[in-house]
Image 1 (tube, one colour):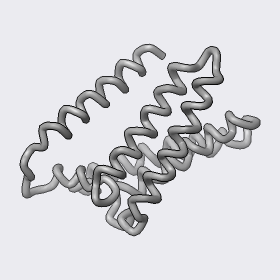
Image 2 (cartoon, helix red, strand yellow; image 1 turned 180 degrees about the horizontal axis):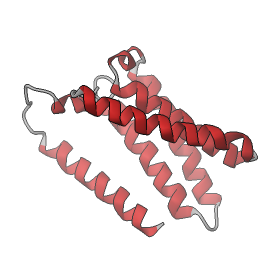
Image 3 (tube, helix red, strand yellow; image 1 turned 180 degrees about the vertical axis):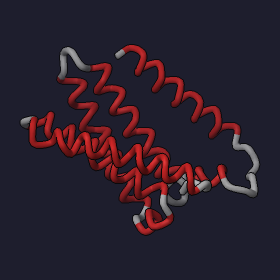
Length: 144
């Protein structure tokens, strides 16, 4: 859960907008592309749930399972794709990061509580892994 409620609302609006975009695209595509859009839609809905207190009612293994399955789906699509491997790899990396967050925290996005007082001690390994993940995501994004 994210501490400042104003940030929570901004992120909620962003996730809802992205989810609406993918919802509109679900019926327009066949087969695996339809599943890709549905997976993005589910990701947006999950992200909304994770940043609000009521999202804690979903057990962490559910988040980990959904994100791990989504990671596998995108890895397989990237493996089979000739022209969109980088994009599909970025999607797989994003899903894997969410699975890792779900596993690493005691509940959905508990690590985000660091945005609310009192501050907790810095976990240098977690900070370094987070910086590496963010850097990899940005590097992949610039290659698209």
